[in-house]
Image (cartoon, rainbow, N blue to C red; front, side, top):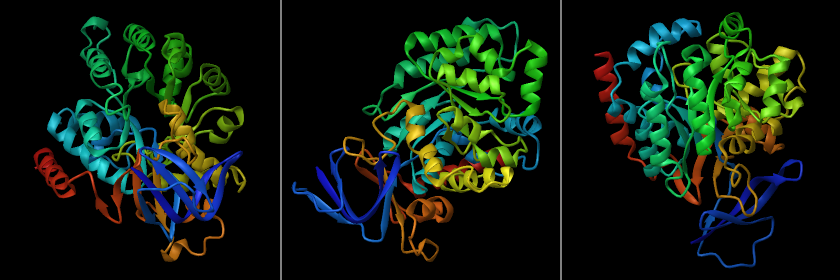
Length: 432
């Protein structure tokens, strides 16, 4: 089917980033954008949709999270990461069943889709439940089963997490016409050992996979790795072959100049998670330096237990103002750079070169912001309006591959009542 969105404002792809179009048209043929312009297209369309009062922009791509942790939202607040993780998170996570995880992921999908996320990257156990949910919901997802090892004497062949990860790749990679991609993942340097990381990284490379890791999130993690191995986490992963596959590195708060040069050389994409890093007191990632060096910086929410939401519109705003304040310089990060981090750069990180911008030939992964809200008027600078004024609740439509998943408060592919019922049952079982 061919669909024409008309009388909308559009943040379309431009030669140097984005170009703003007023009262414009966007045509879709099946799952692909086939027209963008300020004059009506000459070609015929099967259906037209009036989008007056709407601003179209590329769907947001949340490049780091742990979606089922919405069930732990509010647990362990005001604790440093190590205490938060080992004393609060893991004891509850040990009690999660596959159905709890399925329910948590479905709840997370409601939150992400309704706030403009069209594709997300996730790192969690029982990930086959997330794959099945993504297929049903129509969203795009890069899913992974993180590998950990807490026994230095455990053989790689006996690490069930690595086996599950590789089997997941074989079962689901490329499912739903490519909407579901399976990544490999190593949770972190401090939750694994060299004799596990090296062969697992080799398996990722041999199978043509992509890797997700947590990297230098805290000073404690970074410094203890140097004390233990005489090298930073980035160098440790690199020397073990992890960076020989396209790698997404979450946080990167404490990376050094040498680390960033290494990441640039190996094509590692850092993921900025401003809310999580501030809430856990981890620090401020050197995002502007990364961008200046040419690193492909993307944006993520992290999990809802350390954020405490999955609203990427909020991350856009915080990332914009955070670095200006920290550096006492209002020119540090421009709105166009932030929006690129949340769209184009995220698509590159996920290996989805056919999305991330509104351009002819790209997939129709599109969101619409409601310009009729009081805080969205006047629209004198659409880019600034998106980054500094818009809220997740302003998302009026979310479309993936030309299919509308959410519109005007209604979920079209998910049963929100059933999902909320099942999430409540999981919470009751976990907390009594």
